[in-house]
Image 1 (spheres, rainbow, N blue to C red):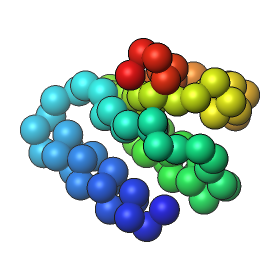
Image 2 (cartoon, rainbow, N blue to C red):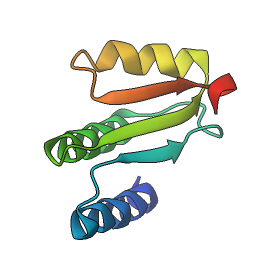
Image 3 (cartoon, one colour):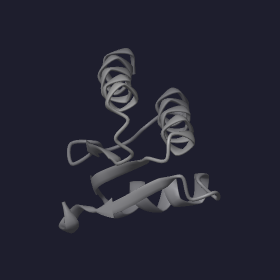
Image 4 (cartoon, rainbow, N blue to C red):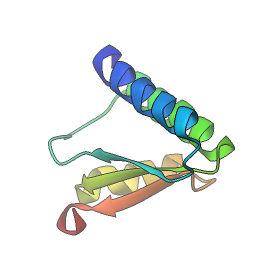
Length: 86
């Protein structure tokens, strides 16, 4: 999580610096599972981006993870894209 946090933080800072309201895309094709710390990191990042008018897009999710995240994100903060859409 610490490594991903550093990468996401750098990307969010770039978005803040440029003022570009867009989507931050994360390639999740290698992701097979996530824990509570990973989910918390994604939620904090998604909420922060949402406050800036941007979205967090998770690309290449397998069906299991996409369904789990959909169930844990009732507010729809994540843009969840399937493995075949990546």
